[in-house]
Image (cartoon, rainbow, N blue to C red; front, side):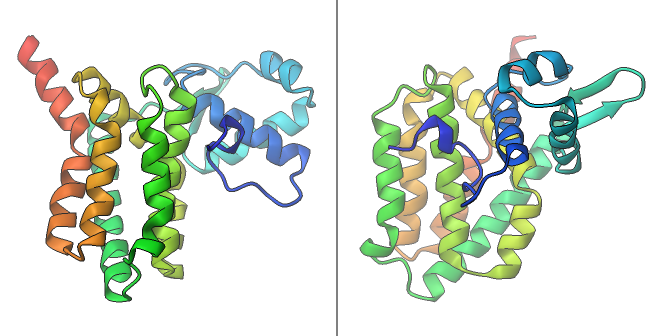
Length: 230
């Protein structure tokens, strides 16, 4: 079982205070402890984490560079709010990159049962949790699943491109995840991921392309539903 402490980044072998602080702040953003558009309270976090303001500000700078935070002059650092177009664009881009990853995996013959065991283990864990209640664990599993796909592909350039946008992908993944729940389909969270790995196992890239497009479209479907209620 992936623990909440393993949430996003693969842990450093020798984490520094800065690493730990950055991960804690990132986790707080991803899990909605600090909401989109909300100002990051330095005093609250430095007190809770037991770090200096210098260390915490360096953590915020790192997350600003990765696209999770935005600096507003004379006001402070705020959690980035993604526009509807940005969410759609990032989800679509992730679908393209992960389709390429699937093509590589299938092309190399790395889609045998033993190769895909980590995916099935993650899906099994998804099936044992209540996604709407255990937000941190759900986020951890969601992120780990998709990162595992890039790792299995083993393509350095692809991984670099995906990883450069990883934190923005993670935020839009969470938005899509919340959209799935808002549509009343929380129970399909594990099933949707089982479909993804199933297409890889079958070596069917066209089916994978179809499944991954559906997988990243929950936000669009949610917005259509919202507009229909107006």
